[in-house]
Length: 403
Image (cartoon, rainbow, N blue to C red):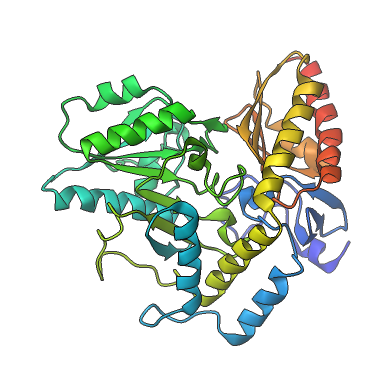
């Protein structure tokens, strides 16, 4: 056992136990593969939960970050960071929106979006603005984003929650209209194009279009959380683009910088100038290292057609899983788009995370009964075949056991 392995304690007595960890210490990665402290190899079908867009130790990204570290990693926001404008220009071009705010995580981006919505309402003379959110949604664990999240289990113990949210079911425009009927305090609708933590639940294309129309009719902000589903994961830059719409506010994070912490809020004309100097901020937001990582990530994605690869490999995997599992008792369906995929089973399947680790595969289980796959966007067909060859027998064996 290496020095690193012996150093890692399975109980981590000095670390707050905020995560239920598996007994693995990952110490190295290359492409779509990682190694633990004992030298065991794993196919990475999780990408740090949709973070490692370019996989691990990318031959272009890594030296670019090394160069940036040798120049400057951080300067405060009293001064300009040239790559911040270059990255913003790309995000604006991809999205059809106009301006960008930088922070460090999806939680912070979502928090900024909620502040934007409230300020939007106050600027219109609404004293107690209300925001529509969704059942099974997940937007973060700060007090405000936790309140917007639709998971009572993770809210327990943190009350009182922030007021000002109206919760509705997904994909029912009538439910949305009924929940907001006659309410002059509504200022925004806040949704995930594909709910990630909620179980890979997509918003239907027609529903997204209906919400866009309703927001236009009622002068609400349409705020689309693309933290997990954005940055090419579904085969378009942002998952809502499959519906041909443009939101007013779009939080981003995770895959935007391939592992370097980053968050961003992209805003269109309706919301781009709500914040003024002093309205909001972030000490580390827009730092030179994160900006370089984001810019390099997008350039590599363009050059290597990783959006096309996400579409192709996602379709390939869906076909394979439906073919291999379609007649297996206990399999329900495959959901998602591109390389954001959920395999719904008819029972809780958290045990598959450890079984997958034992078999050399990293994945997650979300919403109790959904096997979630979020591999790097560089996934090859050979690696997709390997993923299927490992995971299908695990699921079949698990489902063959007594429920």
